[in-house]
Length: 261
Image (cartoon, rainbow, N blue to C red; front, side):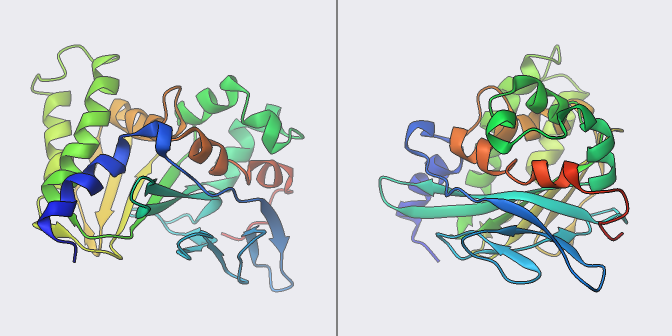
């Protein structure tokens, strides 16, 4: 565990200091296996059923069942959140999507390369419309004070909610943000802890921290604000924003039914 003196450094690295954030690029490819198993593979570091974030070696399954869900979500890209001044790895993260829903919602982008998609604002806006379910999986690489983690999330979410929700400190959305913060009401979030955020068209945010599943938060605005942190016009990292959509061209090109459910 890191000493208390390092927690402010880690907290700053969670979302702050965008200019020094460094993400490792990954190239994703759809791999169709003989036994009806499909996967996106990172070119630099893969196994048959997992993608590895190259700098940290963090493993991401090619598919996962999101918290509170039944339909597997498939990986589209991975990235690393660093505090580069001190070369401290904070967490690795990956984006997963409901493949069938994504292909239907994003059909007009079929045939576009990753380099074309990453410069197309309408593509990212379509993602943030949440017409299909998506999941973010974070893996903590350092122990972080629970309160610092909660404050880091609140600092990036509150201004995004303020832009779309009048009276963010009011009883409705203000209460939702407060309950979101309460999910991190632990002394320390240990290294290796997995955090998953899953949202769908209904605006039901389901969160798991470690092995603890939390009650559903019904707020489409909070869902969009959370994904906007990584995919919006002012992301925590531009490189990370590009990395996590690298697998979409192959996902959209796949024929219906090729991904197992």
